[in-house]
Length: 369
Image 1 (cartoon, rainbow, N blue to C red):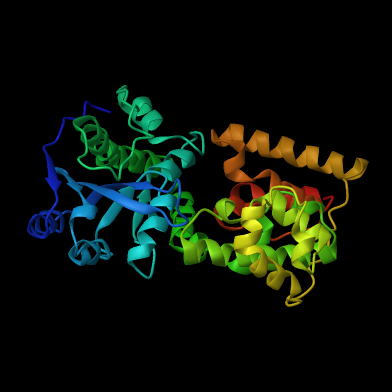
Image 2 (spheres, rainbow, N blue to C red):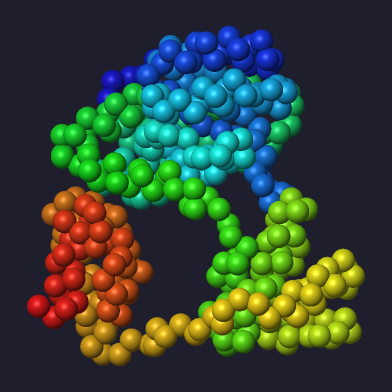
């Protein structure tokens, strides 16, 4: 890629300024976009800054200083305008607080780079350096974005986060077309528009509790109710779920299944202050015998034949990844391969473009053909 020139940067901190910015942005067929946010002590991320780049200018929108952001979000709802982002999922989850559906269309430069062989978790600054030989200053990565006034270093960092997005998109788009991988990119991008990707259902919260896999059927049922209560409480109080009650305490409660307040003492990571504040809620959650039983995982420890089959699948995945010059995990995750060993046939690795380039062959090996 050729050198990318700097663009003028405009700070937007008023409704009149936002109206003018929107009038400038709405005429662009594609925009680069990023957000800065804070989530250290809250359940929901707090939006602190929105960066938007056109081909001619960068707008740093101080949403904390603007009471009415509706003109901006009406603009972003335009499905005729391409939004270019890097690793878009977290930003889209944050922006869902201001709309009913994930923004689209999105060109995620991380997904695009993965389709071309880059590491699937490649960061924005690494991608910029890889394509332009420019090293972005990352000193403001952990800065306090909700503090005001923003420093010049913060503003420079925020502008750099969107400066390169449009040129990088054009480069990656051409590479994808040149290697006939438009279907790959299109299918993987569609996953970003699934609202369920961003929702944390209370009744499945137990699956994210560390140690849940070691519990019995009855203990899992108790944990489901406890974790659901914690998720609901964390949302209501807008505090991190681990600040409500930590995972080890939920596991201890599920194992002990106390029925009276005095039985809550002595559980790991459940101090007296938490018992006073949340004891009633915890006991109420444990007393609710609702929902279907949660069966034990019937994924027994793989024996010799299963291990041999998994090895064959891995070898094929590695070979095909080498031929296609991509990361093996792009084609099939370890979980996909393990599912095939257990006899499952409908996995991400066997659907869509993955089924065409690898999945059918994986199924044949799993079937013993």
